[in-house]
Amino acid sequence: MPNRIELKKSARATTRSARVSAYVFTLIYLVLTAVLNGVNSYMIPSDQLVIFTGDRFIRVSEYLPFSHPPFPAFAVLFVSVLVWLLSSVLAAGWVLYHQGVRRGQTMPYSSLFDGFGFTGKIILLHLVMGLFVFLWTLLLVIPGIIAIYRYRFALYNLCENPEMGVMEAIRLSKQQTMGFKLDLFVLDLTFIGWGILCGLTLGILSIWIRPYIQQTDLAYFDAIRAAKGMGGPGQADQPSDDFFRPDDRF
Image 1 (tube, one colour):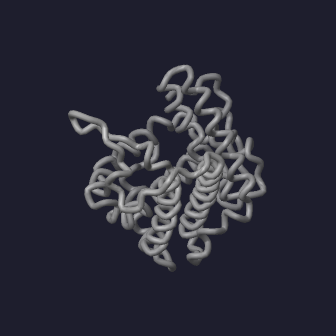
Image 2 (tube, rainbow, N blue to C red):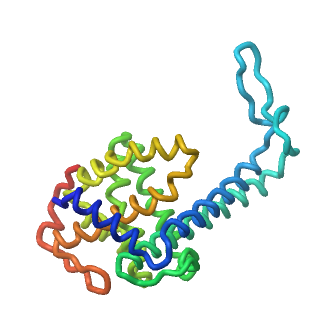
């Protein structure tokens, strides 16, 4: 079982050791994602949003300084899809930066856009994982949550080796997380307090917390692969005998 305390300490040290500030990088990433989400929200027809005041319903557009007439449905759909695509690729760039920092590399701010080099695979990976999680959720909520943890490392695998196939990245993630899903779930629980504080500061604290959380997750990724005898960066993944156990307990 990975030593959570030690991995968190190493994650903090790794974050501080980044040759290109992880905090400035995070600020750029958060600003770009906020702009994309803002554009997407602006496309929502404001005259269709209503709130209940206790005695009547009122249109939100009556109180918006920049209300606008509704956009055509195809335009709203197009922008929503475009925002999702760009957000997915930027998320891959975010991972690529932190993976490079863990390897001691100098990762420039432009590395946030490195995901555009294999955009197709990133989008396909998100689509396939989304479909799998949706299908598992149809059974019950718990299987859907387990599926989320099952595919948690798929993007890490793809970013580490963009030549890898999408299904191979997912297959490796299933092998890597087998027997460790509960550990990852507990890890996420330990960050709830930080998440609340980030919310209370309107997200400002995220500039310092997001890199720490990401590096901790990557530290778990490396530790789990080491525990399973799988290859690290630049090495081939070698399956161990327990990869193909018939059960996949949470």
